[in-house]
Image (cartoon, rainbow, N blue to C red; front, top):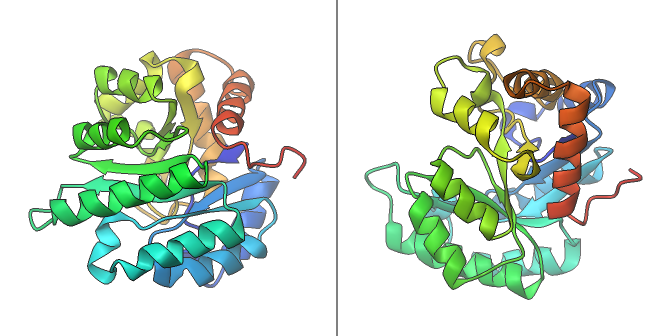
Length: 256
């Protein structure tokens, strides 16, 4: 089973990321993609991935971390993409939720990172909050080789546009909450060929954790919830979502 989005390098895992990854592996989660959020975090991220069996890095500058960034960070990102050979560029995108969000800065950094993804022929892992149409607009201006729209919560029409552009749609703990009607509807009605699984650990905890720390070992139970929503076996679901993840992230080693 592949967790396509897990921040195993986050501070919440600072003392037990090895134990958390071991528990996940014992539960059947044998591959974990660890997205980056800022250049300052890249060294820690690199270390965690290097010391975690089945972990893969994606490097990128998250829109909410741009207050700590400048144009020199893009050169640092280029260096990591060139030297570390990650499976994707990410987590990148736009976040217009906060009223103080600098939309111009976010748009500039997003476009620059899409260009780097094109240069290195890498897929991207997208963050989009209150900005789905703006993200789609940027992708049309700067086409890339696809990727994952992480924690997707747009409309069916927006989902169709991402799929046309070669993207899969990430679903995780949010679909386990009975009140998440839109996400549960999307997870049920979207084509199976468009879905990938993720935890976004330590964030977006599933319902049974009651707001506690999320972890990659929760992925099998999340998969089971999604399988029940779609009226299929969890084995059938995971066969499809794993194949979808390998399709969009060709850098994943099937023999890991």
